[in-house]
Amino acid sequence: MKKVKLGSSDLMVSEVCLGSMTWGKQNTQADAVEQIDYALDQGINFIDTAEMYPVPPCKESYSTTETYIGRWLADNSSRRADVVLATKIAGSGIPWVRDGADITGKAVEVAIDGSLKRLQTDYIDLYQLHWPNRITPHFAKHWPGRIDPGKIDVTRERESMLEILQALNEAVKAGKVRHIGLSDDTTWGISEYLRLAEKYELPKMVSIQNEFSLLHLKDWPYLIEHCVLNDVAYLPWSPLAGGALSGKYANGAKPEGCRWSMIQRNGLFRDTAFSHEAIAAYQEVANEYQLSLTQMSLAWVYQLAGITSTIIGATSMQQLKEDISAYNLALSDEVLDSIGDVIKRYPLPF
Image (tube, rainbow, N blue to C red):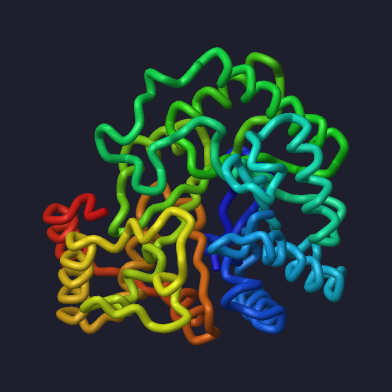
């Protein structure tokens, strides 16, 4: 599998990243070990996690995913350098994580030390802010009228961002963190962090991971162009729209144990009439060209210009193998044109 540079960092990462947010709820420790071993055998060297995982998050399972990865690292210490390990500090709103408070400089320090302990490692390759302190147009808040940017205290926001960057700088200088990145942020968030880093000679954000799939294209082309031109890696998460682009939720189905059968922190915002119409239309394209809907949807993201590494996740080895093998699926111009026709009909189905 091809390795590419992670933004302006010196890290070389596989174009597919192994996500882990089901480990500890839908997957056991043994499942996690099997997935890691298989992914590494397929040439994947990039693993993404977060202190709040698994999801849906709850107090009882908080940080279990990092603990699972830490056990693997402890048993495979000689392979630590083979893995580019990314984790994230949770933002505000989760009561059992630092009382639901905003990210601060002190919170960064405490969270990094907690992650290092659970991961059983001396350093984190990529440390990310899971979501900003301010409200942003993510998690179905991108529709007009959902948020009012004019209500954001810009001065306070900039002061907070600078404090966070300064704390991250201390972690980098201490060798606890190699590089830093963003998650669930906007073009303004990226540019402001880059501006502050340059002005105060602080570490630069080298990446951002946002939700991106055939059902959720709001970052194309403007945010992705911004990333490419500023040498910030773009890392799509949920490229199958929470599993919806596997087709398993067709006709109102909610298979037991699947994510849509669980209570979600932000609700089932992807479960809309337009989403199901779009999925059915993509299924028709897949059928016409004798493709798996899952693989076609993933291959489209894998091959899109501006994508650095796509974060995948699976609850079974069968799913993981299908997701990874889609990397080698080259979509023809005819398939891409047919997909494009569906995009024009359903540009933003949820």
